[in-house]
Length: 186
Image 1 (cartoon, rainbow, N blue to C red):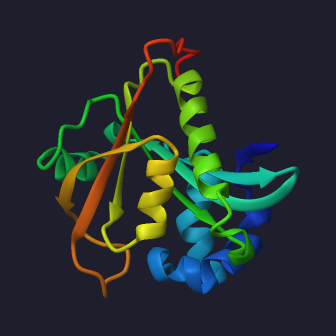
Image 2 (tube, rainbow, N blue to C red):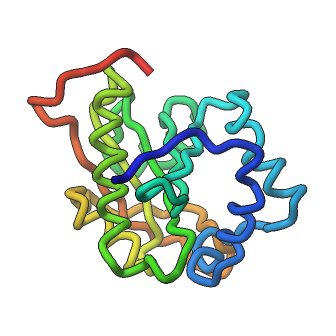
């Protein structure tokens, strides 16, 4: 069973390990020092930032991280993407990683993405779409989005997480299903 909870400061050691894994480091390109992880993930963990960092578990064992936020809460990112693809005012985006390389390629990524997207319809009554830009060379990531039911809606010229990469991103989207009843406002 896939579950999640808000990332806590006590999880930062595990997150450091995951960010250092080659399959994660290649795309996240994040400083794994204690100070950098606390600086970049601490505000969301403490509820001081509008984004959510969610520790994802499979049968109670931590396996990954999902970041979820409203584009409206990050106007610069929203403007950059909205200039290139249709982006609803109420759209949410996600970013994700599987920490254990042994779990990559087993279908877990699409299952996690699908579960988070389904929960988004309940968690955020006003969200009309989940829109995810992903670097065009990150085939495993965009294939996971496709397997989770998102469709490619275009390309975008965006700053990459890894400065060694070019700016070419694919943009994926899934709209709120007509039968998804809104839950409480998030």
